[in-house]
Structure formats: structure tokens, C-alpha cells
Image 1 (cartoon, rainbow, N blue to C red):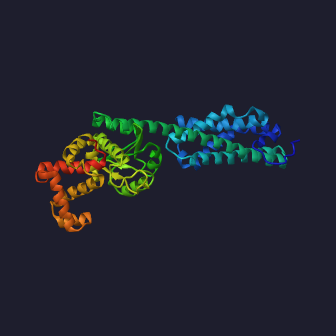
Image 2: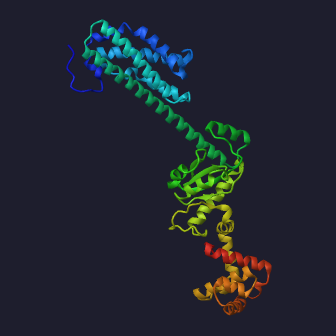
Image 3: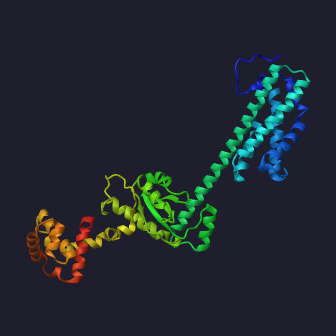
Length: 407
């Protein structure tokens, strides 16, 4: 007599009479054939001859499932470890074939339905009671759930393996794109194929803090390449001017400060990255207008093409500092306040070619005050204000000084 069961458990076959195994074992061959026939008929993805590697996997899965179910009824403590690999492999196979698990799950449901019908017929013919029959139904469907869970696990394993390979290939692709010398077309095409990446006509490099790289990348299209280069987050964005890119960049810019290099052909990726990285350094040093360290993250990236002059001066700040030391030496003895006024006056003079009214408007002073300052400036700088080449150096000096140029 079967034990009275008080509640459902995870292994309902434990409470089945061992004699049930003898009853259903004789049905296994016929059940296997019917299950395979039903799967081929009812699951579109499997509507083909069950031969080759695919067919062998399905046939083995059906046969192993039925044999193991019988074995579990006879010895519940034997466990399922020895047969799990079959169902893990079926899940991995679906992932590698590029399918979802829908078809395999449908096949499991069909198998459970056919097996239960055949098992029930055999038990009724042997006058098995209602309680064992009900327990058998529960055991069949609980068992099929376990097989399906194994296949889900196998599918996830295969997906993780593919993603690991994909990430590695994409990192290798970034290294190739940033290399010196640039990759030739054949090498780039081969590396892109291995990484599952379409080589674009143009791309732009984007720099961001390393700790923000994952957040920034999530806001950008899936074809974006990411890695870390010398402690800086590196993003390669195909077709940066394409549809939807501006919105994506704004979302990324809300995560952290980002600097976007110019759009270049793939062979010139290193140039775009070098400029983006330099702009991030300049911004961190306070040498880029509107890029202050403690300011909220902007909703748009800093673009290299919008800050070329500031970037040029920052990257050449040692040389710019020498120019500043030479051209601004006459201001050195002034008080800090007076020196600031003369710097402002000199820059306004260069911008407006000495027009006192325009200078006054820019400096927010009376025109007469502007004229007084011009006179004082000429006392200090003399004919520097009249020589075009010197004026050019003077403007460089005035612009470079607040950007961190070192004299």
C-alpha cells in the first residue's frame, strides 16, 4: 500500500509503489516512438527528420527521460545527477542553434502529455487505484519540470560562454582600432567578423571616468565598443551623427562627464581617442569652459570640435606659458586686482581692435573708463598692441594663462 501523503513535495515519485515501475517499463519503447512522432508533427522547429546530431540529441533525451523516470520510482535515492548532462546539452544546443527555448519547452510538454496518457492506460489495465494514479500524474509533470529546468540552465551556460567570447573579441577589436600603426582593411574586417561587429563608415571615440563606463555604455546603442585604456573609460561609437545618437549621448552625458572625439574613418580611431582623452584631462584640470569638477553632470558630451582652441592651449601649456611669461611680463609688477583689469582690457582690445565703445560694452564700464584703461595698457605694453605677430602671441598668452599655462 502507498504511504498517505500529507502535502506535495519536490520528488513525488518517492511515494509511488515500486510496482508502478514494472507496469510502465514495458511501455517505454512505444512511448518513445509516439513522443518523437508527436514532437516532429507539433513543433514547427522540429518538423524534420530526427537524424544527425540534432536528432540523436532529441532521441537520447526522450529515451533517457523515460528510463530515468522508471529508475527513480524504483530507487528515489539514486538521484538524477547521472542524466542531467543530457538536458543541459539540449539547452546549450538550442542556444547555439540561435533558437529560443520555446520549441524545447513545447517538446517537453508534449512528452509529458504522451507519457502520462500511456502510463495511465497501463495502470488502469492493471487496476491501479486512484490515489497512486493521481500521484503518478504529479510525478510525471514534476519530473518534466526538472528536465526543463536543466535545459534552461544549459541554455544560460551557453549564452554566458558566447557573451564571454564576444566581450573578449570586442576588447581585442578595440585594441586593434587604437593601435599604432592603424590596422589594414583585411585585418580589421576579420577582427570585426570575429566580434560580430559591422565596420562603420565613421566612428567617434568617447572618454569617460572608468567607474562610470558601465553606466555610460548602457545608455548607448548595442553596437558600441567599450573597454578601459590606461585607467580611462573608452567607448567607440559608430555613426555618431546617425538617427537617435544625439538623444543617446545626452542620456550618457547625464551619467557622467564624457568627452567626444571627432568622427573619423575606423583607421583613424586612435586619433579620435587621443583627442577625446586629452579633452577629459583638460576638463578635469578646469581648462575647458563649462566643465567644472563639482558641477552637475551635463546632459550632453563635451565635444572636441567645440573646444579646439582651449585644448590646443592646454596640451601646449608649457610652450604657452613661455609665451605668457614673455608677453605679459610688463603686468607682473601690478597688484593682482590691477593685473586682472589690464588682462581684461588687453583681451577686449584685441577682440575689438581698440574700439573703446565696443570694449566698454564687453567690460561693462563707461567708454571713458575704457579709454583710460587703453592709455594705461599702452604705457605697459607699448607697440606690442600694433605688431600683428606680437598681437597673436599676446592673445595666446592671455587665453592660456587661465587654462593653467606654466611660465
